[in-house]
Image 1 (cartoon, each protein chain N blue to C red):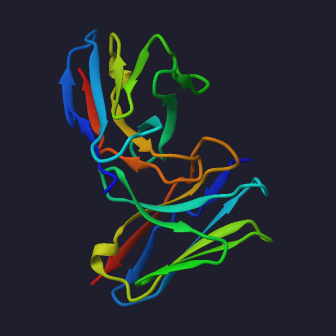
Image 2: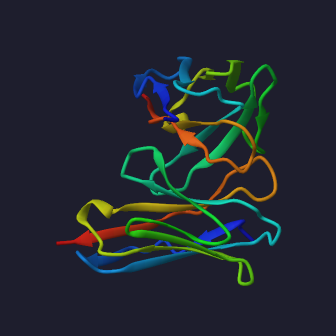
Length: 109
Length: 116
């Protein structure tokens, strides 16, 4: 089983919509999680860390559900510029980053 | 803050050439640097992890003699693809992390390598 699994999508949503992605992880002892955003042919950029208590940054909200072993990313009031691939990351208990395969989002005018 | 610079951003060269890619953390000291490879429409695949002054730890299936990694300082790591062949063509991305393993990695802008 993969350490991290994501629905690859694509998610095609109209501008202004709310969209949510989930990402499941396999190691119940995993401690740290992140969401990254990757634009086509570019490097991943850190979007936000995922804390146990959840965290919010503007239109973006990340949550961690340890009981069901998943993290989520909610985007409210989608903008055209939000179109990208969203990667979830589990650092597991060690030194590594385990990336999901990414969820593709396209926001349509 | 947390800027990572990668150079060159694009390389096209003939089969058999060795190519060196540099990764620099510009405004912080990187305890650990990572090298990834990404093929089209696929996720990032970790190739190796390096700590300053130590030998790199390579992932299973990555040839250490093929992909030479040097991490000589807290701000610079280099990846040399030796005797590159067309199948080595890919997007190579480095990342750098300051501090503990629960800290985020910050990525360079990647090197697109094309071997003819």
